[in-house]
Length: 316
Image 1 (cartoon, one colour):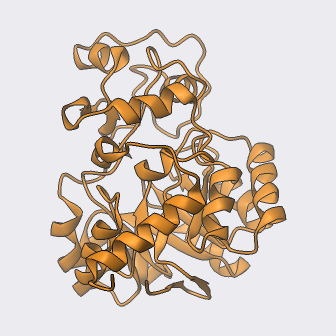
Image 2: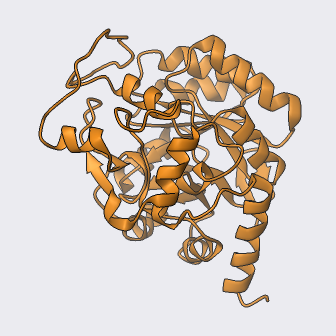
């Protein structure tokens, strides 16, 4: 596999592990991916600054590989979380669910790479203008909050034409064959989230992971989020309630978002699923979750992805 260079950082493999909140992508997963040659991301959204600092330090204690954070622009503590990640050794900051001009300056001043998630050529050009080191192009097949209704294969050509920085493809990628397809289409690398939920090191609950193992294509649906963007999740009693407007009561608002529709508490729903309540919790997942059939270690998964890429490339 080719390497992936993002600004001054180079990973041995062109694989970025998606930063999945809340507390799905923490230091054990990110560090394991970085040790295996990819780019590991800790999800900062939903963490306190103290928690994020501890996660960054824990990852840095066990790897000198490429480790960064993913933080939603929509969270109220966005600036504080970005600065905390930078101060505790993040190599890059990936940011989506909104667009921030300020983050480029914070990263530039600290010598940290800034990688926005984009869903159009216009936003990709804007990101490059402000100093992005790369962009993640996330298609509609991705899990969690979605900023487009187009597939990544359809978005890639126009964005590759629009910018000169590396373009990382995301959404619906689960195998080494998928990686080859994205690289052949011109991407410099891929971001994979759902496939890494199905690993030993992922911090999701066993019940959360089991939903992935059991999911079929028909089980993965779009659902409403108070963030203001649609979300992709695995169907369960909560998504069925949301579909008919039966929203869970907000017991205590944590004011975690800059803007919130307040239909229900997204933070509570995500925290519930991470700890094992997959009835009243929200289990975000991309369409590729239907192809997660086992729970290997990150090391074994990365070796499998490389072997699949080689086979798809005719090297075996």
